[in-house]
Image (cartoon, rainbow, N blue to C red; front, top):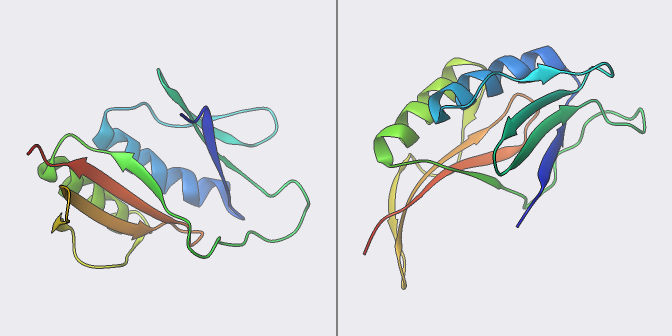
Length: 127
């Protein structure tokens, strides 16, 4: 559905360290810094990027926004969450685990990245 997701950050290197650790858990290569100082993570299905805001203003966080990353199961989600906390992220929401909904169960693990963006590891539990 999405071609790319781009997050603003005031510290590319700090954010790159954080996301390099998360992407390693997910099996992706570390981020690539381009000639404009932006950091990109390329996958077969899309691109995740980090940039200083192009308007020159400080980075802000969108209230109510979450970007989810697919994981292969709770074990990978727990490792993703631990890597994030160990590399400058902050745990938020409920502790990682399975949430039972009306139509399906999900494993979820939430973090705030070093710039304050809310992200989530998601696994759709088979029914």
